Amino acid sequence: MFILKKMKPLFILTIGLLFIFHCAFAEGVANDISDSNTTEIENVESQNVETEQESDSESTNQTETEDVKPWENVYISDEDLVNEKLRYYNKLPDQKKVIGNGRLVSLLESDIPDVVVEDLKYTQYQIGTHYFLNLGSVVNVRATPHFKAPIRIKKYRYQRLSMDAVVEGEYSNKSASDRWYRVYWMDKDVKQYGYVFAPIVHKREFQFDKMIQAADLLKREIDMNSTAYVSNYKNRNGWAPRYKGVAIDEYGAKREQSTPAYFHEADTTEFRYMTDGTLLSVHGETEEAYQVTAPGYEGIYFVPKKYVSFKNTIESLNKVVIVDRKNQNEILLEHDGQKWNLVSRMLATTGVKAEHKEETDLGNFMVVEKKSKFLYLDDITEEISGYAPFAIRFNGGAYVHGVPVNFKLVKETRVLQPAVLDEFGGVLVPEVTEEVTVDRVDPGHAEYLSTIGTTPRSHKCVRNYTSHAKFVYNWTEVGQTAVIVIE
Image 1 (cartoon, rainbow, N blue to C red):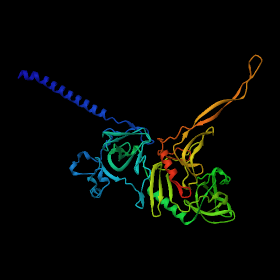
Image 2 (image 1 turned 90 degrees about the vertical axis):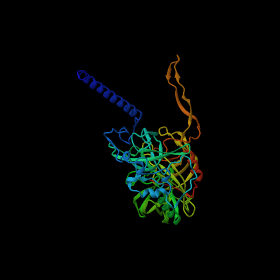
Image 3 (image 1 turned 135 degrees about the vertical axis):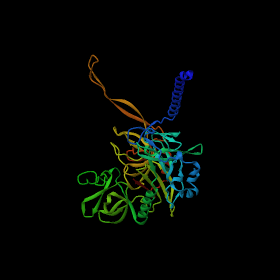
């Protein structure tokens, strides 16, 4: 009895040490697991960088899918998204709908109207009709819509992935959201899936309804009327008058390379600007002006005849390039007499409002001319510094074109005035020289530019990958093709 009493403290001490060792071991294993799944810091739009993963005290999985028996749910498979099984799936109660351990919120379908036939003639750089763009540093694509799920791939700045569904996954208090995108990509001809937390990326899409509506409206306008377009490239037909003493009207249109469009024939004080290339429907004329309408401009206007051209005018609209400034993409439509055919859908980059640069104008424009290359000037020196290939001019100095490249300039120093020396060789008047460009070496075409389809950044043009620009260049016909720019 005495021995047991003596051993009791030792027994308790031993049990305590074993318990402490067990806790320490468990904590070490937990730390190893946590370290192996550490999330990289990711950019959250315009906010400061924050970690994608939240602490347990800050993050709540509202779907509670961990407690749901797998056989109590109907999991949506890859095939279910595109076949008739989806009809059955959509009839299930919301709590039964599970995709990647998250509840399905909505499917991101193609949205191509039934009246349009997708008949793609250019298939490089294909992207889904819905996709995300990463404008931050790095985005983790995870196996399930949870912050601790394994990372399948990473996407870096300016990269994107196609999306086909919105799901409800793990909730973030910092972003006050539980929305995730299901994304997909091809790996050795096998379609792979993953999940991206929605608030940390930018959702993009092709606005097919808006694009087709704009094409239909312009086709009706052109096919039913006599068509012309505004012609004042480089102000060759004269500068338009100032609008109330300034060079920009109340609609934001600029005086440069424009025409005044008067509201009344006899009143030259009230007008707005219409920019070069704008398509017009001509309804009549006076001695000095044409009476016109234009899609996107309400009412009837009187445009001085010197600013109106009928050269290569469109009699029946068969081809349209539609550029979306908001989503930084474009489509090509061709009409076969019955319906529109979607020939191409592609990423694009438009103009930005900045020093030496302008936004790409919204509106409906004539394809005025085509150039295998057009030369551009350096913003500072105003010397020819490079060119863009496969260029299609539609509005002032705005072109749809391929990736621009700079010439390799060959320079030499020329003496304008020799130095004047004294009798001892001292310099009385220093030598006057100048550096001049004697040759420009063409570096050849550049196909790819990582910033295409990201944010507006050109001077005013619409940048394409060079192979797509070549396709558009060959496909476009002056006299049958229009360019529409939407927001």
